Length: 431
Ligand SMILES: NC(=O)c1ccc[n+]([C@@H]2O[C@H](COP(=O)([O-])OP(=O)(O)OC[C@H]3O[C@@H](n4cnc5c(N)ncnc54)[C@H](O)[C@@H]3O)[C@@H](O)[C@H]2O)c1
Image (cartoon, rainbow, N blue to C red; front, side, top):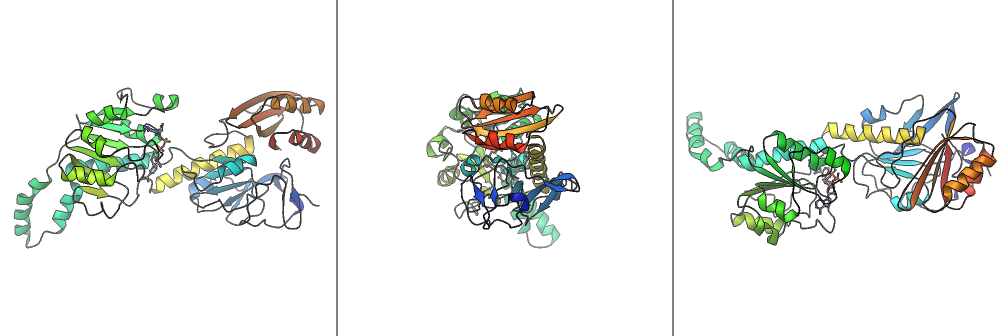
């Protein structure tokens, strides 16, 4: 049977199989140890399938002399997508990487791709500035009653002299308060929470942060003025504004509920630009009516909230800027390119972080199960083929391990086949 390079059929997208031995309908077998870089006038060509529109700023990072990018393409080396649901697609046999321009990866069948040795990338933080700016707008909307005041102005009637009188009489109803000196509680100090916390420090606010899972890198990026809260309740008790930047998981669902609202300072302004479900809308609505909460600004309208006089809901606008889309596309294109061309891994959700500068010679990339003696068996196969290892890096993450090996001579197909036959090796390629 011909191998993939001779096969011209585009494999169906709607049949899904986790089988490691993948074939087109004519039976062309596509070995996962093959190195199907497509040659064009002597230059290696990588093929990229886009399943959603990806911002041109990102696609420009894939130069045309090396990359063929299209929404219909046979034998792609990588897929780029945003929200396209990949769960019912068969991963094309040549696929090495999937790049999600955005943070969430619910639309991607990660365990199945991991079993096939396919890396999945996302773009954490690429939309952080967009969300941060909307949180700033939300704080101002909340403390200056901007939306209610705007509604008042829009409904004014009469001649300008009459409007002037109505303005002077009505404006006292919309008087607000200022940000400097107030305390902002930031729950979740990931990419977005950090940006919000640092911005608030610059605005002269006191900032208290709570995040039991903050990373070392994250802590380095946080202003030293941000105070650490030892519990979510402690942050709630001291804050005039509370902004949520956590994922929706069991421990964050209804994090703001009737009990917790009792602990908060009277007049608190709540901001939710994270996920619907983190705040119990019924409880907040009741707390506003009771005069405990001053206002609530969020990105998640509902029948209960959308016309509430002290609630402002926006239609999930947090990351909806051209800049955020561009940032996501640029980041994912660069990460996928570095993986295809150098085997380096940054911001993968299923593979370990790996970066090795290239030395002279040739590079092998091996995806394997995280079990003992893999490196030993791979090195032995390389030595038996008469190649010398110049540099090597092996890292693992959960059940996955990944090895980059620079060798002094070009590995031939028989070596690739031999490495792939080692039990636990999922994919191997020469870069
Ligand atoms: N409104 C929008 O359009 C929009 C846009 C982008 C992101 N988001 C949402 O914003 C949220 C944050 O995004 P991010 O990019 O900063 O994510 P991130 O993964 O960088 O940060 C999330 C942080 O939350 C922390 N965390 C988890 N559980 C916690 C808990 N119980 N208490 C305190 N901290 C906890 C984690 O340790 C992590 O540091 C996500 O839910 C994301 O979906 C919304």
